[in-house]
Length: 372
Image (cartoon, rainbow, N blue to C red; front, side, top):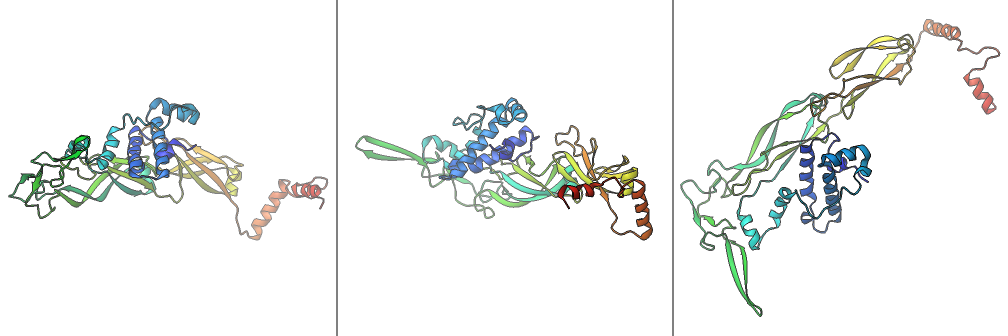
């Protein structure tokens, strides 16, 4: 069974806002009405709803974090009710509405603008400590020439002569069962009740312009690959007075040359000489904040792991930091002069590492075991 956090593409310490943002984006993308006949999209949509139903509820999320799927057995699941998700599916139904009386008024009313996505690459340290970045996006905004009306300056809109300003037209048909009245959106004014005789020459009557816009984005400390930052109102312009959509910034963090990140913890390998490993030494350990002193005890073996508490990545929620772990890698010299070799031979002799009569070493025992 898939991990709910993985399904929504968020980290395990994601905020409620980040979870909802990810859900809104995925629910729109995989909704069955937008992917007719696509069984894979339908299954994905079910998984997204199940994951959100658990992670959006603080009690269910706590049980899931503690016990996994067993902690929410019977709690999640695909629901046909869609209660509480109206704001998301209203956007979808706008696409498919048309022809029916009950949707005509909605079609003529304000429509929220589409959301935008921007992929932002960050340097490792920018993600760790936060940064302010300036990005540039192309988006629709209100036409400056006509102030969003779509009308040529000096002219004005006129009442539609076909629907007389109602935005709807009625078609009457006779049938063996009597008269049948069908109400549809007016095709002359597209349901607005108004027509433009002289359109704005800049936006061609749409009331919108495509512009390049620079936006400053504040990156909080502790973000990681997969984090999502939402900026309200920086999406596409809405229609007929509707609010603009939102801008969702998806974070990708570049790898560091030395540091490896797992959650909020940092991992590092530090080389030391075999003399320092044997005798013990105080070394300078690279950390995210600079060099830090650490005493390596004598007799340290290669691969030994040490911990520097609170030297990891700041929590994106602003409380606490992770730890830094470094492994010692004992460096063995590749080239020795004769004097160095002789000193090592004497060291081996003094420490009893050479073969003695009546005492078998490791390789002697191996030869006995395999009969060689």
